[in-house]
Length: 155
Image (cartoon, rainbow, N blue to C red; front, side, top):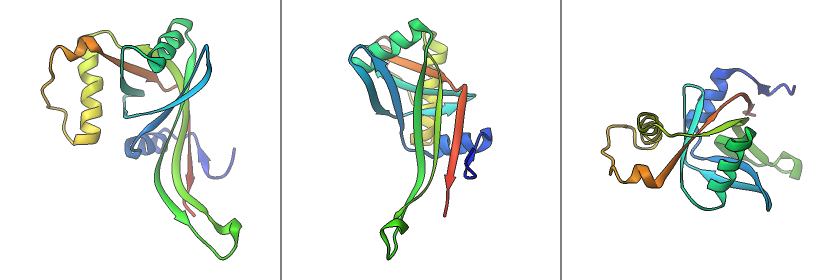
C-alpha cells in the first residue's frame, strides 16, 4: 500500500464527513456509469436520495437485486500546487475510495434518519419538517461501506 494511503476508519470517516459530494460508480446494461450525489456518512453507511426512476435508480435496484457492490469516491481539501516545472503541478487533497452493497431503504424511520443525516451535513441541523408525500416519491439509498481507503496527499 502506498505510504499516503490508509485503511484507518477514522481517516475515512473524516474525509466522508468533509467531502461536498460523492461520485457513485454503477454498472447497467449500457455499461459503466458515474454520477455525483449529495450524501452523508453515518454509522458505517453512506446515505443519499434519488428519484424512483431513471438510469441511476435502475442501476441501484439491479445492484441490490443481484447483491453486488457499488463503488464510490469522495474528495476534500483540494488545493492546487504549482511550480516552475510541469511535474511540480498537481493537487493536495484527501480522498476516499470505497465500495459496498446497496440497499433501498424501505422503513419510514430509516428514510427519515438517512435524509436527516444529509440535512445535518449540508444545513447544520436535522430538524426540518418533511412533506409526507415526498417519502413515496423519493428513494433513500444506503451503501454499507465494506471496503474503504483514504489517501492523504497533503504535500
